[in-house]
Length: 199
Image (cartoon, rainbow, N blue to C red):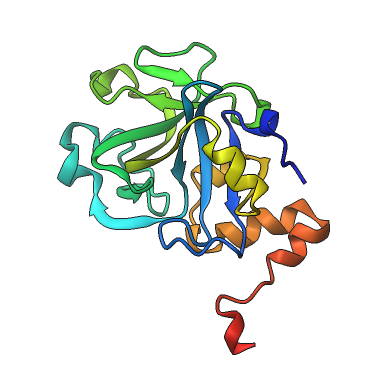
């Protein structure tokens, strides 16, 4: 079921189990963007869109994908409870070369062309070479060893990520969708009621 520490790496998803009641992470799907034995783990929640437009907080980046039309493309997502006054962004690039201001997550073929964007660099460096872009306010972070103990306690499933998870247009159904495609016990967990006391 993917509970070993070496399964935690960039491109993996942390999917909250029904036991995780923390309102910041209840039914959340977190993309791991950085992980080190010493530094700990950093990720962003993929299924918490806000109503804040990218243009309200990062005007230069608002038109990077103008006219793209994908749902939720122009809104900021809440990446987690840490540093809500800061932003980080992910982009999927279309070319073979890595543009300046973009660092691939690597590690897993499905997310090989997805990476972190340096929001201090000029958006023009990425213009035309990106087909998906998403901004996150705040992030999710764990100290070294903290995430591993939460996984052992039964708070998280660790599963492979897919590009459609990162930039999907139906964040409300992401938790069920990711679990369902795992098959077996995890597919069954996807049917777990939102409020078990009503069952």
